[in-house]
Structures are given as C-alpha cells and as structure tokens.
Amino acid sequence: MRKALNILISIIFITVLAGCSSLKRGRSAELPAEPAAADYAAIISSVIDNNITQAGFEIRKGSIELNGTEIEGKFGLHARLNRKGDFYCSVRGPLGIELVRLLMVGNDIAAIDRINRVVYVGKKNEVLLRNGMPDDFMTIIFGDMPSENNEIFRSSDNNEIGFISGNEEFTREVSICTNELKICSQKIDALSSDHEIYLSFGNFVSNEGRKYASLITMDENKKMFHVKLSIDDLILGYDSDIEFNLPAYRRETL
Image (cartoon, rainbow, N blue to C red; front, side, top):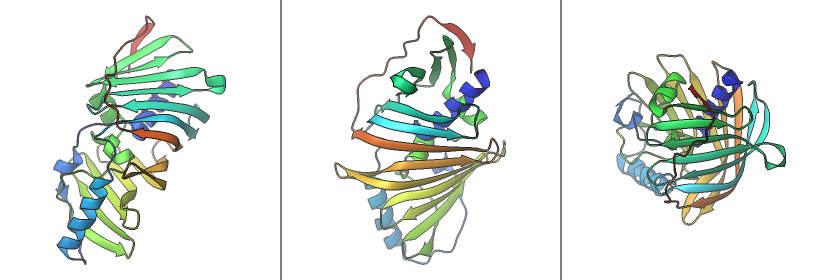
C-alpha cells in the first residue's frame, strides 16, 4: 500500500498542485524564431491573461483515471488551491468514500490514508525532486505561462509556437496553441533521475474571462503510467485558509 500510495501522491502532485517557479530562472536553448518579437510578446501576454493559478480555484467536481499503477481505475476528485499556494485534495472511491486526502501548506505536505489509518508526512520540495518534478509543477500542470520568462521562441505552424528552457536539473519543451492562447502540450525532462513527463491539454473552457483545460493527460516513461484528469466543475478565485490538520493516525515519512 505504501508504494501504491506514493505513486498516487506523485500523480496528484503532477496533476493538481502549485508552487513557485524554478524553470523561469533557467537558461534558454536558442531556436530560430520566425515571427517578429512584437508578435511573440502579444501572444505571450494573451496567454498570461488566461492564467488561473495565481487567483486560486476550487475543483468542485472532477475525476482522475490511473493506468499502469498499483492503484488503477477512476476516482472522484475534489480540490482547492488558495492564492498562497496552499492545497487540499480529496480522492474518493465508489459511493463517495474518501480514500486519500492530500494537504500541502507552505513546504509541509501530508497524505492521509483513510483505509489503513496512516498519515504520511514530508516536505514538498523533497517529494517533488525525488519524483522528477520542478518547483513550478502547478503552473506546468494547468498550462499557465510564467509571467517572467527569458525563453527564445520558435514557430511550428500557423496555430502553434514553442520554446525550450531549462536549468541544471530540468529541461522543458512547451507548445502554445495560438488559436486557444493556452499551452497545449509540454514535456519535462528531469536530468538527474531520467524521469520524462509528457502532458497534453484539451477541451478548453472559458470561465470569467480566463481559460483552462478541462482534460489533462500525462504519461511518465520511467514508471510507465498514464493519467487522465477531467474537470467537470471549476470555480476560479479561492482565497480561504487551508488548515494543516492531521488525524491521530500512525505516522510515516514520505
């Protein structure tokens, strides 16, 4: 159960959490750019206007499907992210029974295993690094564009532009669909651990003047798992406190 829970925690991290930005401070790989710099600036400004993570949000109804893991199947998902980046997530099985609750407040994280009455605790930055994920995983997962970047862009076709950026730990390849003004795919390479995470975004929904992907898929080549996150009901703007309250279960370290 412990190994399976760690996989589930990693997947939830990859699909729903937030953080600060590490790649935006990285170096860029030079690629030939065809459109003028002003054209890129206008596109990127519009993509940034569609960002949703900084204001917080609540996923009131969603689901997560797992394949290639010890825990497989489709599970209900409810999550909240506030403007400070604190996070709550509840994963539920049949009949709405909670299986796992995930809490992240500051750099503290806890996964509450309701079935076995165990609380796994750890530090967010350590868990992310161990599973091949950069600090700005929330920005990555929801297709938000960093407000500060020094990437050099290339033109792929009439409806897509892309960039590559990175640092000593990660490289990131991103494609922006200009017809949606959102990031529509990206690949994250963890250089130290050989993790490769592929993400795609689709079924974009407009909400209060912003846009988000209601369908997110992820594939990881090292652990060979596939994840599909579906968002049926998302409310933009959430700023309530999220408490780091843990039940009196047995404690283990993540």
